[in-house]
Image 1 (cartoon, rainbow, N blue to C red):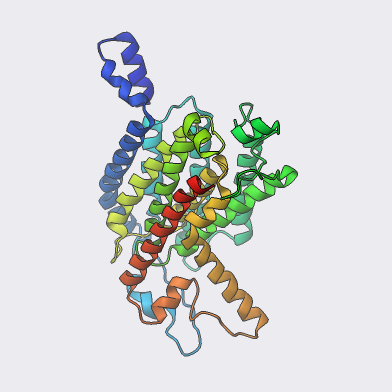
Image 2 (cartoon, rainbow, N blue to C red; image 1 turned 30 degrees about the vertical axis):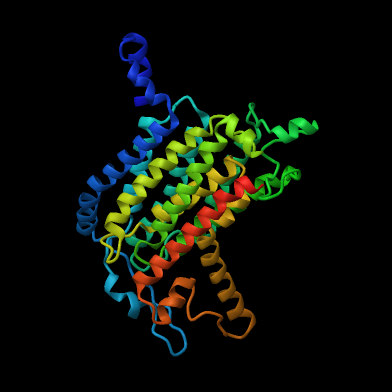
Length: 383
């Protein structure tokens, strides 16, 4: 909105040439980041008080294991802490994106649609948990079905994009390149086409990422911190691949209008930092599924749009480890007659039960997330 208003004012009043700076992706991304951060800080106290009045507190589930404390014993003091803080994250992202994105860009609207869609799924789940006190929220099959539907929408939209992708290696070899092709990190000349499997592949990416972020959201500031770090890495990558000159230099696909994703990621970073202000230990508010599913859905969607789905496994390595720990724990319990691999899953609770303080676990996970993000960015040049 501000982007278009600046263009209008500049055309009517030529003396306002300084407004040209709003044409730059970097300036608009920084402005979106700062705006989202301020909005989160302003909304935070009001939302916390409103949720307290509504008695929208987080219930602590009981998960009992052999000879170990259950989760309610470790985190019982957090019971009643306001949840659904994801509302302030999503509002901050969407308002900032609407202010600073080029609203003629289909990519901007596509990523905002994914943000709203995954946020709505999470909100429904949180609302049912709070409305029906003993409910486990939205049934898993319906949640997964809704996530799959959003993934299918994204995949089909990209496959029908008339502009497609301009890929220098494919052009040199005379080969066709489309969104159905898969970019393999560190591999230059091989980009296999998924063909009809592209749609289920996108569904898998989005469902996995959104649920992995949700599983990571178990300690104060853990999920939002790792999400902000991942968003920073993808912010750099989307800026590079949204420019034809840099994408050619790096031997990667050029994503037309992909630069608008940089602005949304900037807003996501700002909103995340603002939320972390209140979610840092001891947390005053939790994001709930409203935030975790939406943030994971956005990261997954961005990775698909810029053709870095496999690089997401590296940059989002903490989320991958958290999800794998749950899968391994469940598989071991069922196949080995109740035997567990970890003291408790997800893996952050394994370390917590091992005696590490919550804050130490969070900071160490952040450190690992930063290292993985740097490796992901560095791999662009190594390709």
